[in-house]
Length: 212
Image (cartoon, rainbow, N blue to C red; front, top):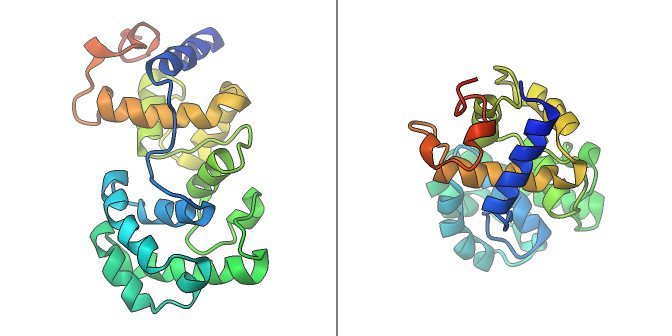
């Protein structure tokens, strides 16, 4: 595990290396981000961004999604994989948003988790990106890999266990952006197959890169 001073250093270095910590999914409306995150499960953000323009053009409102034929939605989202479940969740989620929330994406963890297809990762992303809620921690595959390699957690693979650890370690106002920066760093440098430690901006602070 890293000391708090080392953790603060990692946060600062990544902040300097990746000043723009935006979500890499393209969206215009809050519910579009919600649906895009659902499509991104077991799929790349790049692939999702390729199919959502046509999807959102065909169904331009939440009402049109709620009234959509699931099989038609499936045809648009098929390249994202698991399209039967994802299409069903999107249509059902649109209905719930209209019926229970007046067409608005709710801003609490409790209400978000009641939406079809929404888990803690999605809920935290919505809370952080849409509502700018402090303490939002998005534990995706990059976060799991990098937080273990860097020593932010000690050989913990369960997202439900990583989330509270990172929430306690990270400045609440920076936690959401930090998770986005882990994604960017995981794609560019700390890749799954062959991390480029020699290029890493936090090498001397990292448990793996510094050798302990």
